Amino acid sequence: MDLDASTSKERKISRIKLSDQVAEDIRRRIAREGLKPGDRLPNERTLMEHYGCSKGTMREALKALEVEGMVRMLSGPNGGPEIQDASIEIATQHLRQYLHFQQLDFAHVYELRQSLEVSLARNVIGKLTEDHFRRLEENIRLCEEANAVRDRPVVRRVETEFHDILCDASDNVLLVFFCRFLNSMLRDLVSYRSESMQEHEIFGEENIESHKQLLTALRAENADAVAAIMHDHMCCAESYMRRLDASFRSDLLSRS
Image (cartoon, rainbow, N blue to C red; front, side):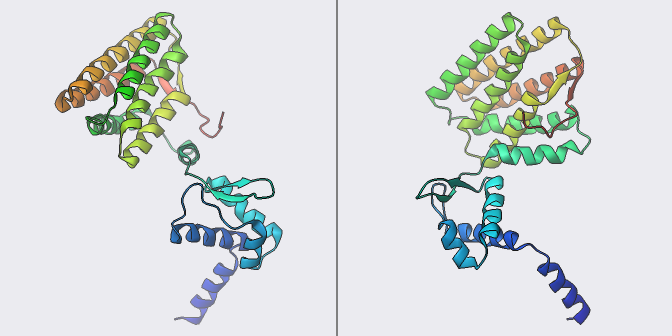
């Protein structure tokens, strides 16, 4: 190996903070030992002795893992780092940060939704329990009530929650993640420049009718009908978004 190249590589490695190296080694330990949510790591002092680092370095490493959602710090005499389940909210926020600096419009979103939501609807056929069906029926009822009193924010929120209930029944974790991510963006980050209440009501009625048809087809486990209804539903939703002059908020970074 070229001496200059080797020296350059060593310099790059040496610039990695010790706390980052410790955090990376803990990630590898979690994977290597097959640790699950609820499992405990050694306490702070034991970890300090193992890595031969200061309290400040150890706390910085654990804080980085906590921010990532990998661990949570328990307080008290028996406290310390505990493995926790990965949070979809944290992953979603990272994706929003990325998209904040990109050119994003509804054509991109619905290009994906027309594919992903159809796949989701097909995936949950035969997996929906009576509890899922009860929740879907209740969701439609709430949407009808909110649309009748022109409560536009509630209507839009409940409409996306219908699709989140379908996610609850799916066994495809990647499909669920991306569907939930798009649902959260539509629920949290959309502004409508058109204030036409009639247009919003008609949009709400169209969504309610689509959801009723989906519910019937899902109960009948009619895969072709489910796919066709969901595809038409997504095309209709995109059309109304354009008619209502919808846009994503300019700020995708804020967490409120």
